[in-house]
Image 1 (cartoon, protein in one colour):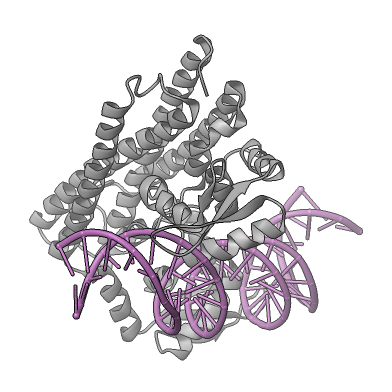
Image 2 (cartoon, helix red, strand yellow):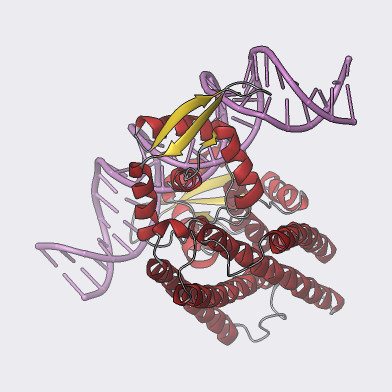
Length: 190
Length: 190
DNA sequence: TTTATCATGTAAATTGTTACATGATTTA
DNA sequence: TAAATCATGTAACAATTTACATGATAAA
């Protein structure tokens, strides 16, 4: 159960459910996302299990916020998750499944359209990652290596994001070129 | 709902639920997986919806197989899915979430262990992908571009897998080197 | 004779998404 | 005055995983 552990990671500092959602949108969206309707009940459950504590905090601009923070037990649970080693082999990448069956479009032009749309999405994504990097560079003087541990490991995932997305764009370009070359050749058998 | 469409892709040729599971293990495991307990009920549902037809086929080595094949309606549904454009932004990569919180181990050596274990997994994965490529190369004379459409698009996903996994290994190496460098430096603030 | 493979499924639990419900404050 | 943001949640549904259940054949 990754979400629980991810939230335990975030709750090193006190956060509300709303905060957690924002953190997903801002920093983790490249590898995980969760809806408020999943976050709120899970926080309550984690409270019941003694993994977090909660306290109410009045807000001047909205309703009372419920602030959670992990307990020693919660931290131990997170460390156990990390110590168990990498959680791998469960990734699902829908767009690759689509590419796998792209021949069913029975039209090279439409396959190219698909790959171009995918490329555009990746380029857009790269832009946001590069903006994030730029922001870090200007805020943290020792970026990327001489920064606090917490930021350093976060930067590692940003670095992976940048590498992955650049590899993806290159792949799209190669794929489009290859489909074009095939399309320009004489008629092939299906 | 991607699984339904993926199965419609597979059911271009007649297959049993058992066959479909094998296909996941053999060819799609890099970007999707599904259990038999999900496959069987979904096939029945798709039959009810008129997306596939089924017929029983006696087997000499086991129980009667139920063979499914997509209908014209099923194929249309698949084409609609592909035509809708890339399904993106829903990927969940648990190991990146772990790396993000690796500072909670509060021990560089254990973080390095983690990254090394991740690297080993990736190397193993690369080996299987390279074996797959080798197999194709020796079976299909025109590999990778002068092969039937269906195989060509499958090869595109293999190519992406190889690129991605190689980028991952490079990233692991860089990450390990960076963690080591930091560990050897003087004490830093958390 | 035990284990693996073939082949079907159901049941229960967990995880995740979409829709619904409320109400205050701030900005356009 | 309408829309966005703040902030909480519940309900219903969909997707996925894990465990259970059966029984034949083939290989070690």
